[in-house]
Image (cartoon, rainbow, N blue to C red; front, top):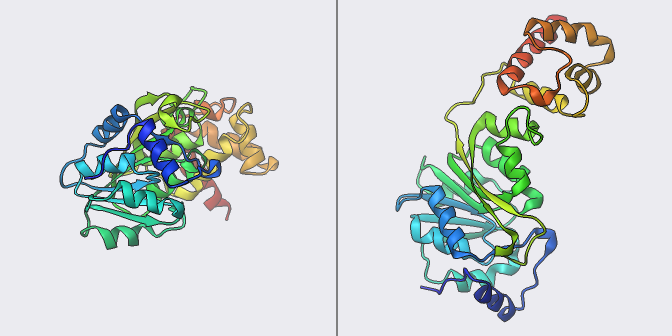
Length: 294
C-alpha cells in the first residue's frame, strides 16, 4: 500500500517531484492533517459496504482514508494534470476508480450505474472547491443519484448559511434550498493552516442527511423557489416590496397584501424572518391567486 500523503512534507514532496503547479482558479488547496481527515471519514459513517462518491480528490489524501473504510470509492477530478500524482498516491487501492472531468457537466447517474450495484445508497465525501460549492451541492441534492449522506468541507461562512435559521444574518435562499431537501449539521470548523497552500479563510465540515421526503409540501416547487429568491433579493426591503419588485408588478400590491393577510404574515416583515413552512404557505396561496387570474 502506498504511504499516506496526509502531511505537509509528503504532499509538498509529491507536488515537487511531479513538477505540479497549483491552480488558484480551480481552488486547489490540499488538506494535510491526518486527524481532520479521520474525523471527516468518521462523520460519513462509512462501513465496509459503503459506496462513496468523492469530488475533487486533489492529490489523494482523503481518498486514501475513504478507500480504507469503504467498499468502493469513485473519485471525480477536474484537473487531468493530477493523473500521474493520483496514479502514485492511490497505487494499491484496488477499490478506487478515478474519473477525470467536470462534475457539473457529468451525468452522475450514469457514472454511478457503471460503477456501483443497482439502487445502492451513495455517500458523498469531498473537500469542495469554494468557487463551485453551491452549484455542486444543488446538483447532488436535485439529481437522480440515490444519495443518502453528504459530508463536505466548505468555506466556514457557507457552512453557516447552509445551517442558518430564520432571523440569523446568514439565513437566505441557499439555507432554504438545502434544508428543503436535507438536514444540515456542522461537524467541526477547520483552520486554514491545515491546507497546502493555505486559503484566505477558515473552513468547516458539514454533514447533510438527505431527507426521504421534502421538508414541506408545495403545489409548485419551481414557483416556491422563485418566491424564496424574490423574498431575499434585497435584504433590507420588506417582504411586500421585494415581491412587488422581483416577482410581481407594482400594480399587484393589493393582491399581494391580500395573500399575506390570508396566511397571517405581516407585510412589513423581511424575508429573512420567514420559516420554510411560511414560505410554503405563501407559495401555495400565491399559486392559487395566479390560477384564478388565468
